Image (tube, rainbow, N blue to C red):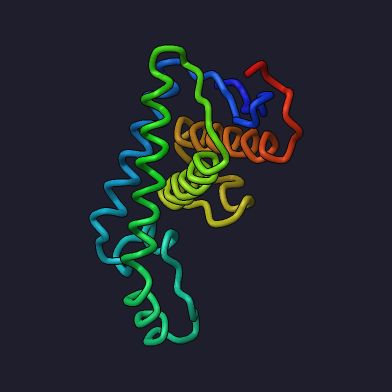
Length: 166
């Protein structure tokens, strides 16, 4: 996937081949399924990363906060995933992913969620956590690739228009 750039019309544009779009679609669909299922946060470390304790030293307060906010947060995460899937589908003919500012925000939030889940599955809590560990090299490459996409989108959002013809 080429990096996102800001077009003259203010949209963020990147070109992704069919395999890259399929991988993103698969990952986003899996995250969407995870957040729609809800599941037990206490038994799934990935869900706990997506819905961290609001009060780390107060289990009861955290549980109550989660009870009051989790459904809305999970719904927003699901809506963001649908936005990413819709924009990937729109790119299926040309390979060109074109995002307005609202869609770009959804992409950033979904990429964060996907990277948190992949990091959790790999046992990465901080940048240094995987040093010296035997992590799945393919999933580590996916994790890094998602970071590249996310970073390029942030840079595109922060840049003036004119990087790509509209």
